[in-house]
Length: 173
Image 1 (cartoon, helix red, strand yellow):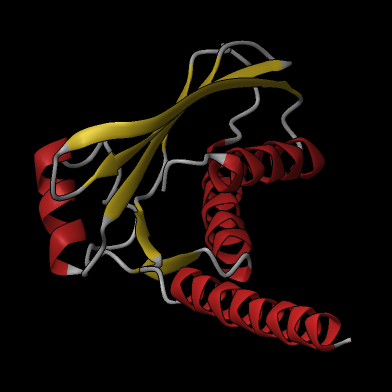
Image 2 (tube, rainbow, N blue to C red):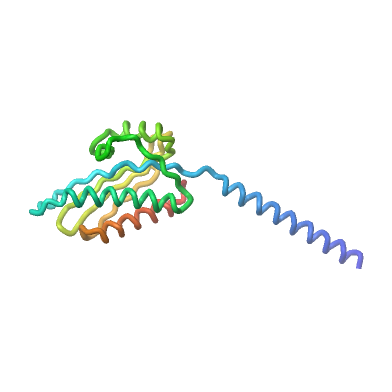
């Protein structure tokens, strides 16, 4: 009987120690530094040869894409946003050299910078390349080439949602 009591007390003590250790690990993870991402404006090139000028719609969709991407990433709780100090419509890889964008990201307190380029190839097909660059190391740590069909708001929203999931699922942050 006495041995049984000792075993129960030992078991209780081990369980309590395991709970304390598990809580410590969770707190350590919760306090891990958040990735601070600056999203540069996305560069857009249209070589589709369409007769209708859609440049105003493309600019609007680009800004909506960027805003939705920032919002989706921040909503995850894994990523914080850093705003780049640039004039409107002059802060993409088509406007500023990558090195300058990295400097602006560093000034904004970002740990990482996302740059992107869209290319509308035809009336139905668009492709894009996105890079996330570690600001301190100045190297690409994530990249994706995506393509999608359509040039309407719904197609752009699907592409943005896909990219946001890809970034969030990237396990090396």
